[in-house]
Amino acid sequence: MLTLHSKTEKAEKIDGQLVLPYELREKSRLRASLQSGEEVAVFTVRGTVMRDGDLMLANDGRVIQIVAAAEPTYKVECATAFNLLRCAFHLGNRHTQAQVGDGFLRIRKDTVLKDMLQGLGATVTEEQASFEPEAGAYGGGHHHGGDDHAHHPLAPIPLRQRIHRPSDKA
Image (cartoon, rainbow, N blue to C red; front, side):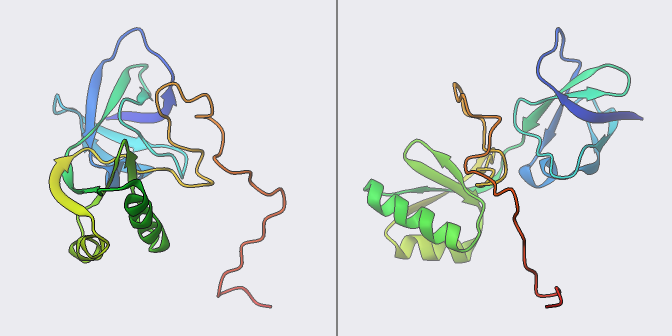
C-alpha cells in the first residue's frame, strides 16, 4: 500500500490527488483512497495538518497533491466589519474553528452556532465549500498567498510555558 509520510515544497510531477474534508486532513494516521482509487495510508508527525494544495511525499517517491473536499459549511457575512468582528469574537470564545475570508467567516455546519450568529445580526448561508480554518495563535499560522510569515507562529511562544490541567497534582 502506498504510504504518505511528509510534505514536500515542490515537485516536477504530481502523481495523484487525495481529496479529503478538513476533519480527515488534520489526522496524522489515516487510510484513504486517491482519486484513482488506489488505497493510501497517511502517517505524518502528530499535529500535521494537510492543507489544500499541499504536496505529500510517498514511500515510493511519488508526489500526491492534497485537495480540500467540499463539505457542509456556513458562510457568515455581516453588514459591517464591526459586526463581523463581533461574530469572530463569539466563535473564538467558543473555541470554534473558523476560516477567515475577505469580508466573511466560514465555519462547519452547526445549527446552534447559526442561531447565535443570526442573533448577532449576521447573514448565515449554508454552502458546500472547502474548509480551511485558521491554525490558531500557536499553530504556525495559515499560509496565505504572499505571506512572508507563513512558517512562523502568529504569536510568540513563551520559552517556559507551563500548561496546567485539572489532572495535575498541586
